[in-house]
Amino acid sequence: MKILVLNCGSSSVKYKLIDTENDTVMAEGGVEKIGLPDGFLKYKLSDGSKAIRELGLVDHKGAVKAVLDILTDPEVGCIRSYSEIGAVGHRVVHGGEKFSKSVLLTDEVLQQIKDCYDLAPLHNPANVTGIEAVEEILPGVKQVGVFDTAFHQTMPAKSFMYALPYKYYKEDGVRRYGFHGTSHRYVSQRVCEILGVDINKEKIITCHVGNGGSITAVLYGKSVDTSMGLTPVEGLMMGTRVGDVDPGALTYLMKKHDLSADELQKIINKESGVLGVTELSSDMREIEAADKAGDPRAHLALEMYEQRITKYIGAYAAEMGGVDIIVFTGGVGENQTGLRGNVCRPLGFMGVELDEQLNMTTRGTETVISAPSSKVKVVVVPTDEEMMIARDTRDIVSKLK
View 1 (cartoon, helix red, strand yellow):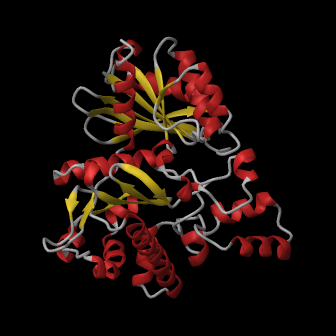
View 2 (tube, rainbow, N blue to C red):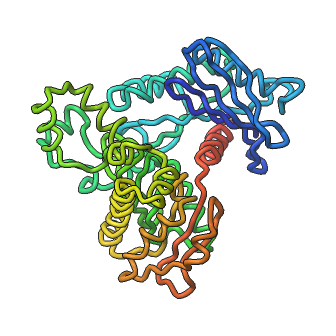
């Protein structure tokens, strides 16, 4: 079955067309600058090179139409007509407590996603706009929603509750939800396939480290704790997000500088993290280069960034009563070799031992980077959220026939 996977953001639509018969990616690309006069479609050609098609001013419906047009283009397309698309799978950021697994998209489900707008005001409305655009252009084609938060719905209350007055949970849904769930689910399953072990018997810590980052404790195949919270701001230090911080520091700054809630939101989401500390960049490659050039602020940011990851791994190992496997994924986790080394060395006391040479030469490939003598397996697994979405979509739609 050919599955079109869509990730609709506020100003972009990313896509992959995946043939689930053999798990091959037939086409991929994305529309950027939606709602602006210089919108464009970037796509990959059959030889691996990239091309751009200028679109001008388009909305989400226009963006989805442009994607479908390029897929069926006589010269650069890979399918003859829309009818070859068996189903469409959507990344949906926030499912609240309503969804613990991927679901067929119906009017009722769509309304429940809209009910979560307050929890993800930047993402869920864009996700819904993409779903409605497909419904209009491809009437009758089944659609499936795959939620970033769903994997974490197995967390016990002791992990997801905040020590705030209980009424805020009951009335407003304020609790830990966690994100990157599709990625954590994929790499925790994939690492067990690589190692030839049963996920139902393993204690795994998955580290999704990119411009946004989160860590998850996966006990016997289920998420039992994760570092992101009600929003994707909590947890690790990130590219522009603050991560864990004393809430009292935020109220102090609000009072001292007469900041509105929106202004504070911008600071902790867009102006903090690595960018905030270095005042240089949110790109870890640039920060590593600046550190090597002797920039003390870049050095400090790297130390803070790495220590936070180490601290979470240690905490989750304690929470699960040990750890068998540590996984690194995400743009930074898959490629920043020095970071992986610095994160893992302090964990030697609990049996983590890297093959230093192998670690330094591993970038973006499935590789066991721990030494043979290590009590804990440390593995790099490139994430593939789109493949997970495609498989879920295929499984759900196949059962309808």
